[in-house]
Length: 272
Image 1 (tube, rainbow, N blue to C red):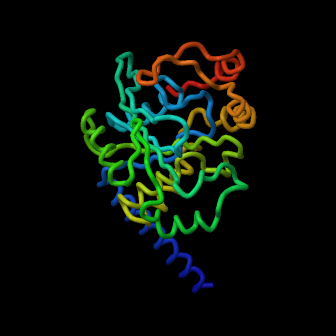
Image 2: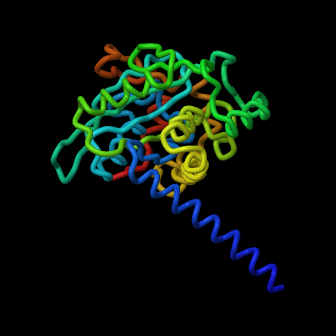
């Protein structure tokens, strides 16, 4: 009995040391990992000015005194243009610069749904990191052939737009055809790669686990998204969540394409 208690205490001590070590490493670094931003799309295209998830990310950044925030994706049809997102603080308008980045898997299209996840490949990436040359990266309409080139772009944008200190980072997290409680969604591999390259594999594991928990504790849309995820995924696949918009560089939207989207999204909870 006593031996069992000693083993439990030893395991607990190791876990505490790992978490403390990870916290110290990250607290002194250039990236502040928050976690998953969303569970499903509620409007498309996403992460444009005044999109609910864009507003939410800006609020996360403002709460942490940051001028910028980074959101990472799996590359699709967007050019992942960075932009200013307005916030409101006691009636005073402020803005956060949202930096978008995505990865392109040159050895496949990524895991579209749970049935297509390559478990051995995912495990190998988790244990050994991303092999050199496997990923390309896309941000602001430019394809970067190396991770270093992408992050130079990210840090340059942050510096040019007033960033001091670490940049809050999320992965987009939206799922289009699975249960979002089981599928971590869009952008996690790039999030994990940034953490691994910036802080090492142990903090990457710790903050990825924390990041999976983060939206359940902080996302004000979680109940709406999780209770309606099947409907929202179906609407997205059918194009029913799409906006018409006039200028991708400004994100100025026209009307939603149909009344179904308006009826679904009009009851979104406030995050203020």
